Length: 469
Image 1 (cartoon, rainbow, N blue to C red):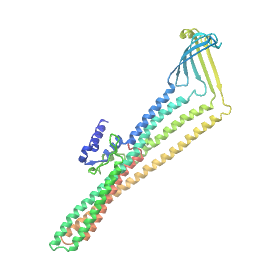
Image 2 (image 1 turned 180 degrees about the horizontal axis):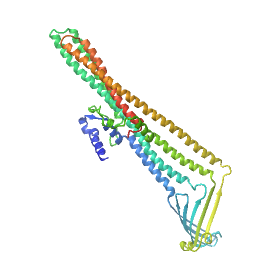
Image 3 (image 1 turned 60 degrees about the horizontal axis):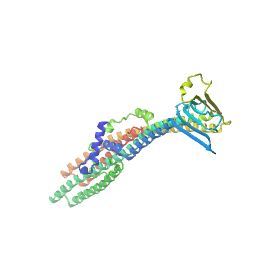
Image 4 (image 1 turned 180 degrees about the vertical axis):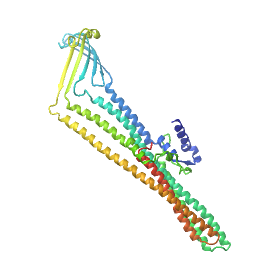
């Protein structure tokens, strides 16, 4: 972890320090992805979502906080003090729906409810749901769901980063392709400039016709035109890549012209460390893909909701019991004898909707939501597996195509070299060399296109399995 932080720090100093932009030379895929992970605002937003979900857990836990209350009342009318009443109380909710309560009472006056006890009293009691809300209630359900939502926020962050890094990798390899194509044409311009000089000297020496110089210059100009066009495409590709590059102070960063892809773009460390075995990728996708994990947690939330809705089918049976004491010495009175013999107060309440219409409807909806989400999960699992297989097939095909195209380019190179040798010996023409050279150039550009598409497909393969992190 420390090494990674140091790497990102150094990259930041190199790439994002405005005073050292001119010293920037190369940027590889690993550096680009590290910068995106560290500074991209979307990644920071997902971190904020995680923190918000943690705050929601704290909010849900508030339902289990002890509550201290105090009720004070007094009535005086016509010179007569009806009553003066004070009752501080503490209520302690517990996980299993049971509530503990304890309090003090002090009642004085001349006119009060006969059921009330005059003077100082105290009580310690318990409230228990015997049917509905015994196994689960809203406050327990909300806390359980808040914890799941926190885990879901972390998984969603993985899903967002997976997509973001894939988009970044695609922009990076388009940038590499644009630059390598520009370099190919640039090298061809240099070769043709030397060829024009050679043909001019041959014409001056009477060894070649004037039309040969025209053909050499025309070939050079066509390459110069392509060079200018490819340079613009490279700059535009850099702008597309800049979309994903941000500074540490939340400001967007525009990639300067002085930054070019690394010379080792064909030997990226990231790619060499990727798992490219189909069975492994399918297993990893099935077990760890963030999109599939999200469905698991969604089903967990819906399962809690189903249990909560089932409570609506149960009768509401609540039992409350208070042990009473004269004065404030509650423990002494409570230990004087068994419960339900003296100094007690209890209540028993039962409610049952006769048709249970709401309970049956809500419970059925909860089950249907689970069934619906399960079907979505199965479809998503199939889509991911097919996507992995599709990219794997493309990966194998591109690998074979690169081998063929490499040999094709070598053959064209040999033909160009042979024609150049013939030209020096006066046995060939510029038309043949230009024709061979154009074919060689096309072959090399196609090879670069295949290679960058190949590396992009490797990233797509990791993305499809949900492994870009």
